[in-house]
Length: 345
Figure 1 (cartoon, rainbow, N blue to C red):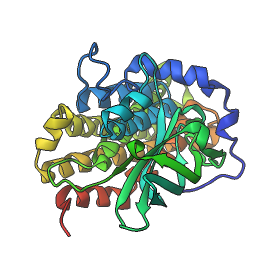
Figure 2: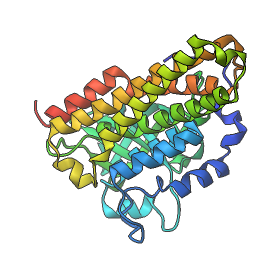
Figure 3: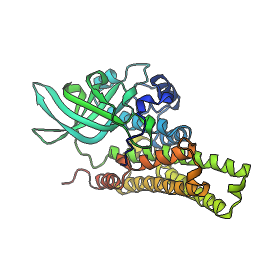
Figure 4: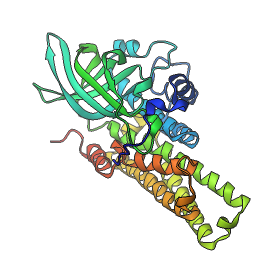
């Protein structure tokens, strides 16, 4: 992804201090999603969570992106044994787990513990995480193993310098010879009946970015309504109208991708082709939203936009997010292949 060497570090972004981030994420419910110990809360569906993430994105693309991270990692954590869930998800605590799904390291079983060397990058949310999730390959068996490690045992390196999503804390997690007890190491066994986590990542990461574009368009339409010489031009109005259609298409596709999806068990019950189609719709929604941004910028005059103008920031945020791991065309294709052919050699 394009990197700007002059972009400020996410650690210096004041609106994303640890207390603010946790306090702003908690009311949305994304930190509670998939937690079996929160029986007092109504069950979370995929569609509900996508809507919450979209709403977060309309307020702050960075916040929505970190919410998507929490939604995906919580889903992965929920697959660990009950004793691990009690350890990671302490009662009445809004735990944030950061990490990546892609294999980025190796591990070896020694005397009942799993010894890990891994580098997870970029891993959004690290400055505020309680735990780090990593996926590594077992040196002896070649199987993939997912591990959970307390943030205190992880060396975090500030490396996030992308032009957009500067407040998402997408830095690098170094697991330097970390010893992981067996209860926090889970060997991944392909299940043709289950939706891969990459499918959920595609839906969840698309939602806040589409929301961010919708919010940018709303601000622009307000400006148009206020009038002014630049908005009296026919080409400007045509560009804004075309962008509005693209964003409407994006939201319709995102809704179609998540609206029919209920609980995790319901998603698993869908055919692999239906899951892959839903993920593909989410990618199309993001593409439509991203396509709208150049129209908005050219329609209002890119040179007239200050670097910190809300629309300029949204252009950078969505441009970076669209190319981030699970939403890149290559990763999306891999996710679809996993959905269609999981468990087959």
